[in-house]
Structures are given as C-alpha cells and as structure tokens.
Length: 516
Ligand code: XMP
Image 1 (tube, helix red, strand yellow):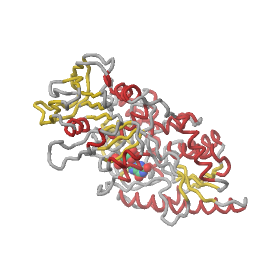
Image 2 (cartoon, rainbow, N blue to C red):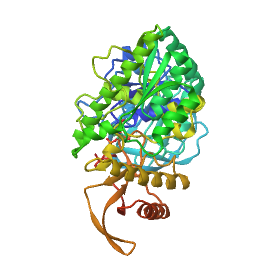
Image 3 (cartoon, rainbow, N blue to C red):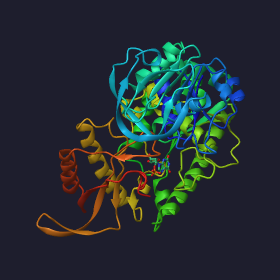
Image 4 (cartoon, helix red, strand yellow):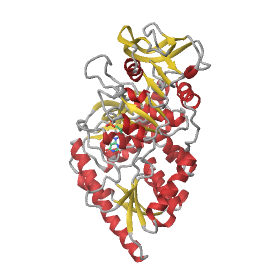
C-alpha cells in the first residue's frame, strides 16, 4: 500500500482518498506507529499529512528520520513537509507572513513532482510556519510570499515536499500533483479500481463463508445495500436480508428497499413492518438522546426477532447461519481506532449495531473502502442510481428530525415536506453538489401565519443543506434563492399546518448536521 501518516489533521483521510482516486491503494497510519512497523507493511510510497502543531515547538509530533532513509519515496504535505525539512537539517521557523486559503504560488522549476506544472498557479495553504531553507541535497521548486520554500525535492533519494494542500479541491492542480508523485516519481501502477475490488471481495467472502448461511440487515442506505449485493454475488442464496421498517424513513424509501432492491438483486428478504411498535415506544418522548436510545434498542429487539426466523428457516434447509454482514466503511474503522477520549456528542445508531451476545462472525466487505468507492461498486453491481446516490441518512431516521414528540401525523407531514425539498433540489441539478439536506420539523414551535385569508398557527420547516467531505465538519450550502423560493412556496401550499420555511445557515461546528 501507500501509507498516509496522520499527523492529526482533518486532511489525512482526504489524502488517502485522493490516492485511491489515482487508482492506487492507500492506508492510514498514525504518526505514533514506529517506522519499523510502517516499513513492515512494505509501503510502495509514504505520504506525511498536515497537522495542527508547529514543528519547532517542544513535544511537536514528528517521525523518525529512518523513514527518509528506507529507499521508499516520500511526499510531505504541509506539516509533513515541514517535518521532513526539519528532520533532514533544513531551517523551519515562524513564517514572516502566514498564508490561509487561496495563495498565489510561483513554480520556479517545473520538474519532478511538479513536472509540466504551469509557472503561476493557485494553491490552498494553511500555515503560520515556513521552511526558510531546504535541507542539503534538495532543490527548491516553488515559492510564495509567505513560503520561501513552498516545494522541494531530492530526486536521487525520491523525497518530495509541498507546503500547500494538494488533497483539497481548492488546489486546482492538486490531484495532478498526487498522481505525478505516485505514478511518475514512485513508479506505481494504476491497479486499484471498482471491478478489482469486487473480484477480490467475492473471492474472499466465498473463502470465509464456505457453505454456511449469512444474514444481513438492510437500512435502505448505500452501505448496507452494496455490502449485501456484494455478498449475494459471492454466495447467492446462502444470504438472507432483513429489513426492519421503523416507520421513520423518507417517502418512498421503504418501498425502494422492499421492491426495487429485491428486483434488482434477487436477494431473499424478510421485511418486518414495525412502525406501530416504534411509535408506541416513542409516545410522549421529546428528549433527543432518549429518542435515540429507544429507537436503537427497539431496533435491536425487532432485528433479533427476525433473526430467529432466519435461523429457523435456515435450519429447515439443514443449514446453519454463522455470519452477519455489516456495511462498515474505512472511516468508521479509522475513527473507532483513534477515537479515545472523544466526547460523546450524540449516540449514533447504525443498522447492525447489534447486542454483544450475538455469536455471529462478521463479514465486512467494505471495511477498507471510502464512500466514493462504495458508490462506484454499487453502480458496477447494477444497483439503481437512486439508491447508490442516496444522501447519508441517520439510523433513527425522521425521528430525530422532528423536534418534539414523534407522531404518525407529524411523520407524514415531514415526509411530504422532505419529498418536496428533495424533488426541487434534484430538479435544479444539485443532487451531487449538496452532500446532505436534513429537512426538520419544529413541531413544538408555533408562529402566526395567514393562509387562505385565515389566521393560522402552524409549525416551521427548517432546510439544512450542507456540503461536507466526511460529516465531521460541514459548511451550509448556498442554495440559490429561486430554488429556496420554489421549495418554500410548495411546502407552505402543499403541507397543511406548515406556515413558514426557514434556512439553517450554520456550519459544523458549532452546529451539528442533524438537529437532534
Ligand atoms: P451530526 O448530526 O452528528 O451528523 O453532525 C453527522 C452525520 O451522521 C449522520 N447521523 C447518523 N447516522 N446513525 C447514523 O447512521 C445516527 O444515529 C446518526 N446521527 C446522525 C447525520 O445524518 C450526518 O450525516
């Protein structure tokens, strides 16, 4: 693999994704991993990520110099670039001029990692520390107003570094630089793509499962659908899927799972319609964490019941169910590995968040993948576009998008408002621009309106369109005014008792994406 060494920036995952986009397999490792252990993974190249520290401060994270002496090509990015410069004897100090955001960059020598790069370009920077002098043996490739050495390389040792962030979209030629480093400087082949992943996983799953049977919970989301389809491709009828309809999905989504998905894949499925059960358990509950707990627990119990049915049916076929499929993605794996001490902001619930006493062995075919890769695989496996490109949707569903008590009437109302918002955003061609757009019903807020010549005292709907790379941080999406206007008019016309539509223009942090 290509190892991406994480110096604690929010960008390390993004770097790993960009490497995969260049068709090379990547893995994230923490900077605390000993270099010997990194080298034991037989890395074909190493990328050092950015990070929040200042290299010259005592206790700042660093990496043992031996990483630069192993003959493995290394690219340092931002903080990683400064670490490289410092460890190899260059001069790193507080920058005379910090640079944050888009930065004019002069390429002095378009060679090596910057081969064929135009003289003047925009890069995205975030630094208050600068490399003043490159280490011996390095040539300086670029500079900016605040960074005398903005890029450097030592071709003989195959060591490269840039002050800017090539992994972010705001650096227009960033992906090109990553690709040049991987393919030209490090000589790596393009051998990582969706069809390769599918073949690989199918073989692995077959070997793991043998002739046992497998159960999989479907949420209607991309991950569980792709995981199930992949497993089905590997072992066919040895798989049974379970879909618990908790009654808090969006308009059309339950049907999509029950009909479209089954039709597209031919998977054997057991559906449990538990909406009334869930509603009864949630009666009178308004506190967000309690809602989440109740939904999570109820879900597990309902799934267990369906599970017993699957076991019995398999038994009747003379088979044993030994495995459980989960749609765990790489970011979940990375985050649960590095999440010590993180504050519990919300208790997230995922389909397959099962009790401890379940004795199944797990099959996690998406464990090494990012969302974009999962989508590519889903498309290749023939899943409907509407399913593959579905926005992320929380496990507790619309239950955490109704502020106040959850009732059937409110769910139906919100389902209608949400469907209108989605329809209009699609019509405006914004589906892939907007990462997610929760539509929220403030059921316990009332305001005065005038509708059809009459005074109304209704509730507002909140639109929360956001852009994000990974849901850890988010910005609010600037929905065009005319799209907002159409959504607002339609919702207030078509959804009785909604008399206001408001826009949530808060980033994350300080707000979270969902309201509860
Ligand atoms: P927040 O609201 O924490 O949301 O900023 C971050 C992302 O996670 C989704 N989300 C959930 N997903 N189970 C899930 O599977 C949950 O309980 C849950 N809560 C929030 C949210 O939609 C956003 O994409």
